[in-house]
Length: 188
Image 1 (cartoon, rainbow, N blue to C red):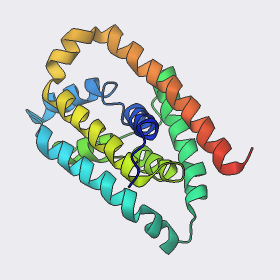
Image 2 (image 1 turned 60 degrees about the vertical axis):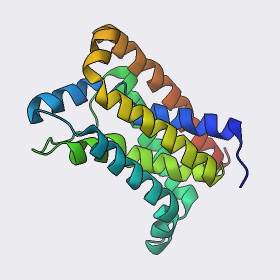
Image 3 (image 1 turned 180 degrees about the vertical axis):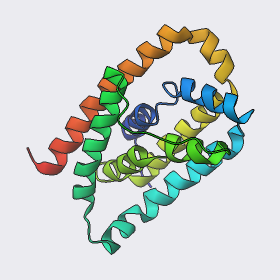
């Protein structure tokens, strides 16, 4: 096993941007209002489990349905691109329904460990070592847990405009990541 600080930092930042838990604080607050409470531990553990499972079996699952990782990465670059466009332009492209129980669905999946995150994991796997990606997942999920536990405090700390600035900044980072993934997997 070879741990690489640069890879760990890169995967952590990429996952941080795609998970966008800070940008999701308004959504989390609304879900908490509707449900009465959110089980932060359960949401973080389920999302972590889903991401780790997909990291290890996602490629095999793709082979079963006849896809290669590069094609999935290119498709993922489009998903990431559209998520970034939502963040930067304030659009709503992806619509989610809010069921009665929110800790697992829609919070753990698809809000935290959704299609963009899963696509990103497989894309990262084409460029980085698995153990470094795992550390990136764990670091992000610790941060996600912290945010879920402290949503009300963070809302007061950042304010509405601060959260909006963070969301747009990470949107631009995601746009760059989407373009990089597309270029690396198409050879353009």
